[in-house]
Image 1 (cartoon, rainbow, N blue to C red):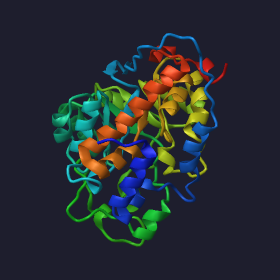
Image 2: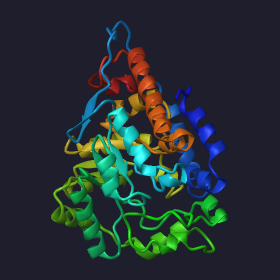
Image 3: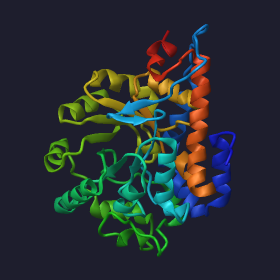
Image 4: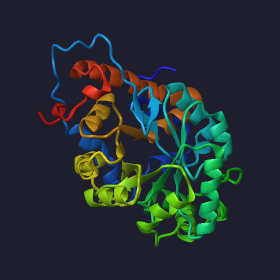
Length: 355
């Protein structure tokens, strides 16, 4: 399928999803300022393009943690893909393979990790929440590793779930026919309660006492590299690397946790400086154009992750819709690189944003 841009895809998705599903995917916390700030901060950055550079051919490929990808865009972990499409995460991971990139599977997926990895043509990483029950977490980690996932992405910005008021109004709960395939204790998500079933689920099962020791503990029970997702501070990035993290994802959870959080692109340079090349730095939040990808890479990110655009594509046309979302970013990045005088990813350097 052909779509002009991600904004058009978003409008199509909104017209096809139920109000509850749309609100779950689209919402941010509280007044949704962080959600808006992520995108608005990209718009404030200008690109000081180069001229008279041979850009007759462009190479968008790079590597992320040693994995080759055809473009510096990964599929971010997002929950409950079957709210958008019957094939759910299977459609999404196949489209990621079509695009030649990495798929990050959410702990809160509707499809078992084993089935997702079996359907994948490229690497699958697993996004992890840590339970209060550490033995259950350890079992999940070993299951993920045995399934063939290539990395763990530890989410650290959700000791409790941010208050997403749209979900509260809708009393969000999964339909009875859908479950959380990789977690125990699903019942809270599906039970009608006064607020959001998912928020209650987090409060009941997820460990809010998690500290930096968790990274070392995870590294002791798995051979998979551990990537820490949810960092917005330079000192926290330095602590993560010191604890053994192989990568950092600069992320505010898509504006869904602390509504007063900074935009991710604003804090990226400080995080990159603190990491000092000891780990790879990725970014998510607000990426909607190919030029946004250039801005993130110029400020030091190895690659970006996109979440909501994948869900929009999934809602519109399943696997083909996800491929279309990633295809839009591929086309826009290719054009923006040419217009910026960048024949390859390595030539996307800091002087494009800070000449």
